Amino acid sequence: DGGITQSPKYLFRKEGQNVTLSCEQNLNHDAMYWYRQDPGQGLRLIYYSQIVNDFQKGDIAEGYSVSREKKESFPLTVTSAQKNPTAFYLCASSLQGGPNEKLFFGSGTQLSVL
Amino acid sequence: GNSVTQMEGPVTLSEEAFLTINCTYTATGYPSLFWYVQYPGEGLQLLLKATKADDKGSNKGFEATYRKETTSFHLEKGSVQVSDSAVYFCASRRTGNQFYFGTGTSLTVIP
Image (cartoon, rainbow over all chains, first blue to last red; front, side, top):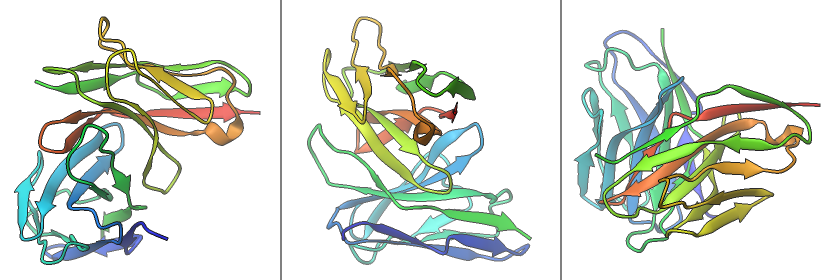
């Protein structure tokens, strides 16, 4: 079955540590996204990529980094510069172009600070 | 700028009650509009969408009509079930293949 796989489901970060969240899709989608979800704040866009080897900052990119070396993979690194990393992180993908685009989401990663 | 504003929750209803969750948007032009649903511990799933004014999206008994004159896309269901308990997000598609999301409305349906 096609879909988006995020791993791990739960992740713990120590002070000063970088951690990487995995996102893989087999939908052959060009565009991929990372969102952060905090209680009462909805979803905020961290980074997005419309094509391999290219990505753009979203609304809250500080303290995060991404890469897009393969079409199916879009890992997110939460660096030590992100001072408040505890949140639920959602990866999504979509086809490019057309008014009927919609997002397909993974099941999320809950990141907590030890 | 473009944005989406939706009704704050939480909302608690009895089974078979009528549901309305309000959503309004601000945008230049006429963006595509969406309702997504999130069940506990999961990602978001598309519930329904509308791509132009007066379109009605519908799925699983839920409906929403794209109202240009009131810039609204309210979600409705005539008779909710316990299994409808989830968080509902209104969203609009902005340019550059990005999406604006509302803050989410938590719905709990009690038997």
